[in-house]
Amino acid sequence: MDLLKKRIQSDGQVLNDSLLKVDSFLNQQMDPQLMLKMGEEFAKRFQGESITKILTIEASGIAVSIMTGLFLNVPVVFARKKKSMVSNEALYCTKVYSFTKRESNDIIVSKSFLQKDDHVLIIDDFLANGEAATGLATIVEQANAKVIGIGIVIEKAFQPGAQKLIQAGYRVESLARIGSFSNGQVNFL
Ligand code: 5GP
Image (cartoon, rainbow, N blue to C red; front, top):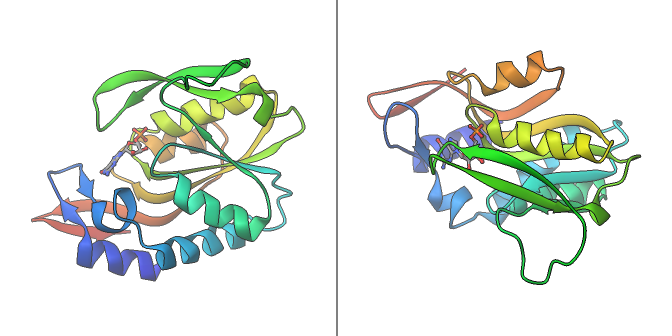
């Protein structure tokens, strides 16, 4: 998606050989117009797949998922990283190792928001080693629902996540695919 690639080139910061900072439009400050366009693009790519729900993970997957949900006209559920004080219901739960925080945490979804006949589109902001997406897919499978595909805003294709997910049988659609970082520059595939 050219609009996103241009934005990464102009506003992204390569922190080291594997980390990209995009806090100015995706991870802290958010650009609603860009989110809307990305939601439209995901909806276009997964049109006709009878998706009934979008599943993402807090916090950075939520905005783009909401926009996608708007275009596909389906609800958006996000996995929490901490159990809420007001949660008194049965939960789906699995462990996910965080690439940026270097620690494992439970991710949690209330059982009332995923049913066995759901056709789920998983969305996340980045794909690195595939831990977050695999955790979300595990939760969908715990609900005996079906993963229709995985939508990723920024795939770092030099890390093994996409290959692992494709090998596991999932359809992966990424809006921008990065082949490498060199001298502080982003090289797209
Ligand atoms: P994975 O679970 O695929 O190893 O990593 C994806 C998760 O780690 C995403 O949810 C994202 O929050 C975070 N992440 C991975 N790589 C990057 C990166 O280069 N920049 C940022 N900002 N987050 C990343």
